[in-house]
Every structure is written in structure tokens, then in C-alpha cells.
Image 1 (spheres, rainbow, N blue to C red):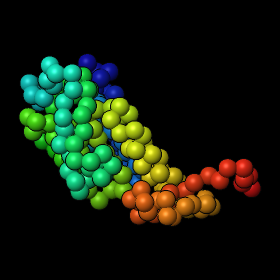
Image 2: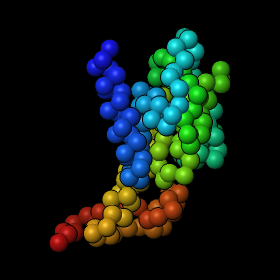
Image 3: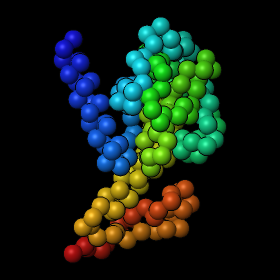
Image 4: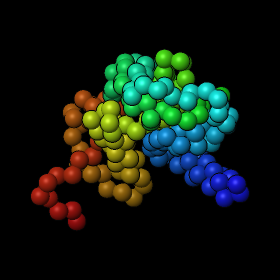
Length: 178
């Protein structure tokens, strides 16, 4: 109805503004569809990608993607997380990075953006916090890089081992900031 169209328009506008501002984006479930539409993709295909009756599904991940680097070349996700329509045509700059056995796109990343990932499943059950840690590190780097902000203390070796191009800020326990 009209309320849903207004919500969709508002969410697409917010998402476009976040990407334009260089903010990290993690779009999960319905958020993946909003991301795709915000980038000019098409509406979901109602008759495809309805999920399997199995309890879990295997997804194949691109080895060149952030998701592939964090989770490996495959991940098992609850089939319920993949219920609902699959994506339509991908929007500008979105690259498919995860596929189900039926070739339905299950995750995308935005090319040229520090951290924008859209995925159909809820990552907490499959990644042991790796994706959320990377998202938070990207947000911390973005905040630290804003003009007028002091650069927090960082651990470059740890950030490099996590695959970060820039050091992820770390708060030092027991220290007070002025």
C-alpha cells in the first residue's frame, strides 16, 4: 500500500545518502532488496528463489569478495533465511558474490565502496562474528577519518591481519580520553 511505498522510498533515499557519504553498509534480508533498488536494480522475482524445503542450504562464495575472504568459499545457511523472492536485475556497481545451487544471487557487494554488502541470510549464525567485526572496523575507520576528529589509537598489525587497508581503531582499556 501507500505506507509501504513511502517506507521503500525513504529507505532507498537513506541508503543512497549513506553510500554517497562513504558510510559502511550491511544490508541484511529485505535490506538487500532495498540496496538493489537504490542502485537501480529491478524488483524481486516473486516466483523464483523461494528456498528449499531442506533445513539448510549450501551457498558458494566468490573468493575475491569480502564475504569469501571472511567466510571461505562456501557457507551453510538456514533455508528459512533464504525464503522469499530472489533479486531481480542487479543495480549499478553491485557484484554478485554468493549463489545458491539454483544460481540465485544470495549476496552482493558494491564495487569501489569501502564496505557495502547486501545478503539474504542473517550472518550471526554462519560467521562467528567475523562480518560484524569487519563492519564495525569499517565504521570506526570512517568516523576516525572525518575532518576535525582526533585519530584514535590503532593496532596496524591486527588490522592488516584482518585484511584492512587502514588500521582499525582500538580503544585502550583503562585509558581516559581528553
